[in-house]
Image (cartoon, rainbow, N blue to C red; front, top):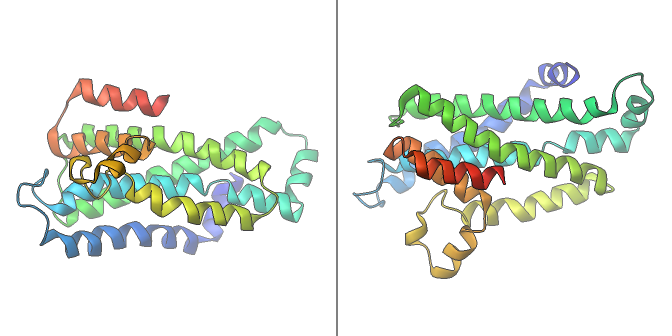
Length: 225
């Protein structure tokens, strides 16, 4: 409830958080659609990159989820909360649930916008729900890492430095924008070590191919691990 009240008071933050993926979807997808191969899976580049945009949205929202707790630690709010008659586990669990709830809402808005722009999901509404599930598997792990960093790091400057260092390399060393087979060998090898690749590939199967249960199960197991 505390974090939902916080979101209600800072609606601009939520709006700004949606700007970046929408820019990628509208402008990046439109700019490169003309030079994308005609036989690209999904029929259009915008459909092809939709899973990548979803994964990037989850990545950004989840990995930055611990920043607010770090601010609480810096300004003394966390000390007061720890002294309150509440379960200390709830401090972490509440933030964990909130971050992934917001990520799910962001994914829903992005998919609806993509549908309005002509993108289609081959598996329909059930596939959209499965897409959110794959996104949450990625988001759960990243949120835990983010919460750990909030207590390990001493100030928010270090946190933002880590985010800046990781975001672009992990985004482009994945299959978000380019299929693995189109990458140089060294990039493809690095992309296969990137959890985002497995989330994107699973989502792309739902969006482009259909219900490939064996492949989806493998992607889900990797993300769960």
